[in-house]
Amino acid sequence: MRLLSLFAALFLAGCSLLPREPAAAPLAGDRVMVASANPLATEAGLKVLREGGSAIDAAVAVQAVLGLVEPQSSGLGGGAFMVYYDAATRSVTAYDGRETAPAGAGPDLFLGADGKPLPFATAVLSGRSTGVPGAVAMLAMAHREHGALPWSGLFGEAGRLAADGFTVSPRLAGMIASPFPQAGTPDSRRYFARPDGTRIQAGDLLKNPDYAATVRRLAAEGPDALYEGPIAQAIVARLHEGDLPGAMTLADIRAYRPRSAAALCRPYRIYVVCTANPPSSGVGLLQGLMLLARTDIAERGPADPVAWVQLAEAERLMYADRDRYVGDVEVPVAGLLKPAYVDARAALIGDRAGPVPTFGKPDGAGVRGPDRTVEPGGTSHFVVVDARGNVVSMTTTVESIFGSGRMVGGFFLNNQLTDFSFSPTDRDGAPAANAVAPGKRPRSSMSPVIVLDRQGRLVAALGSPGGNSIISYNLKALVGILDWKLAPAEAFGLPNLVARGDRFSSEPARYPPGVVEGLKARGVVFTNTAGENSGLHGVLVTPGGLVGGADPRREGLAKGF
Image 1 (tube, helix red, strand yellow):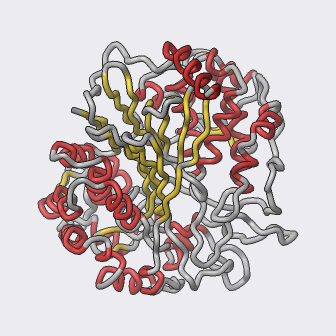
Image 2 (cartoon, one colour):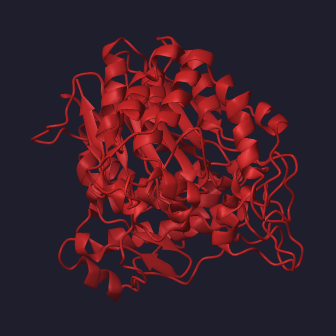
Image 3 (tube, helix red, strand yellow):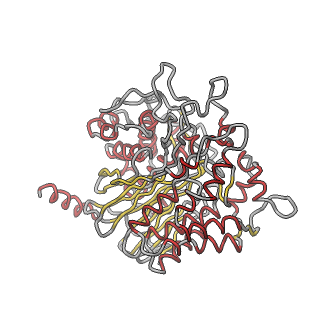
């Protein structure tokens, strides 16, 4: 009772600190909202909600449309992590739809005949790069538990857009014309070709009858349509083509099972932040927040260079531990988040950049080799809030741009297995936490977020794509919303600063005047200023209703009613 009273006192004392509604909130909605990376996907989710659907129902519709209109980022052939807030019980569940390695995959999966790691592009385009897709199975599991409308009625918009065509957005057109090797595969060239042989461009109408047939089959037959029968057979056949065929079998696809568990949650100031469990990198995000809680970043604000130094130093420590320990293995979660351990790590954060930090030694840490994972950013994030107050925060991916560049049934297959460390051991034989193994799920930087107050009521939900920078993007957004009291769109538009090892990557033009110079004087010199391409989407609860935000770097839309 004393603890409950303390929490209540903290909450009441901190009410004035809760994020305030901005003076002008054009995206405010009374009770319901969808924030996604494409307006067509947002509208598909809202249509389901208007029909009385749940947040999970809308998530199925949003994912089905995203896989069509944003195929460079996510789709039916990919995987996802999702955190779900149940308003009635005030509980948060984490769903794991990460892809799995086939039974025939071993530690030498991405080693060439000479025993050395394959070139990354070679590995991506090969049949070896694809894991068993998990997003559809994960959504089906969540729908069985939290759906309000029949599964069969959730694919209508995706089927209509695929059959009738949709207008190609500038972002998709840019990816089609990009130098990424997946954009030049035979499947990609065939799909994105105009009748005269030139490539589809922004403003063109793109039809996908194969995708229309696939989603109609999913609607009629349920998720088994993807994991058994003709679609599964086509996946296996396509992966066995080429010089480096994959080992996936029909038995591997049939055996796939999504996972669910209580979300990984920790307090942050007057809030509770919940995210996905390993092999997601949510534990790294929570450690980053705990490190920052031991600084005065909240009192400083985005115009103070010291605040950005603190953020950068927390990120470097967070990545050093994440890279060493997180994978589909026994992760020392309790040790990484133990207050005494975080205290010791936070003591390394000063008002200027220090030496490159090494990984720590948390309780429960085994012997792990250094990480050699390459993780591009072909991913998407969306948030749904339904009329009952239930929330989905879901990060979804096909891994790299257009996944492996191979298509089946109108959708791209993932290259998720290249998220494993290409080298299974260190030089001294220490195993990498993220080494390949049969049935294993590769580590992911995806870390969808739901924020509650200490009474378990919703405060915010957000997440981002961006490869291994995802954790930094989410951390910045949470500081912006929870500490600096910004609206979601303002927080998402803050400069992205990604600090990992000896590299600082950022967007100089986005800082207030004088900050970049102040950072340089404190030892933070940007080694990459080409831009950090986040795709933050989220929702914030305010006294006036829900306020949504979409990252200005992409084409998303947050809309409610």
